[in-house]
Length: 234
Image (cartoon, rainbow, N blue to C red):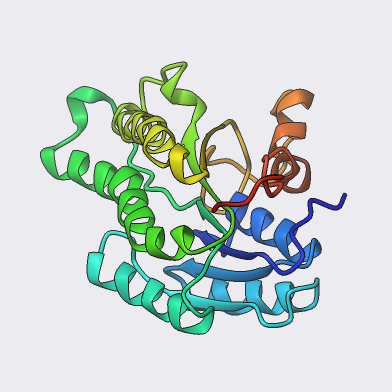
């Protein structure tokens, strides 16, 4: 499928594994220039090697902890330098994963959940906005979670943080619409990754067939409405 992304500049935060990596692969397959931001240098190296062989020969990775504002700003400063101050797409796929019921979580657990699950997204959007505003067209996609719509008792802090992502994304969509920057929030459902939810073996036999389809990185990534607008900014 040709999404019209050849030459577009896409930043994927949390792009070294799981659905973030699937998104980065989709962009590379369509000829976009891809920058991947993640905490793990090892995962970044493997992902960048994969992307360069798919259609993004100048793909690069940057290590940054999204709970650290200075690290996030430094990463986007480097992207700004490499891409002459312009980016078309920002995908926020990184997330915290604090588990526990309400009566077992400490204040520190709640802070960890919100810092990684919501504030990290806020820091990345804030740092990326100058680059997005300079582009002829721009998109932001923030990963939320289906549990913010259908509660899971053991994920109360994670769900609260993802509800914050949904709310902020709706507000950003209104704020940035006059500038023709489209903001989308995606409710992510069950997927199997080495370290993500659910914590089970990579075998998906215990998941309904429809969920397995949703968990397929290629299919899931193709759902996103990234096509450039017909009308550019004036």
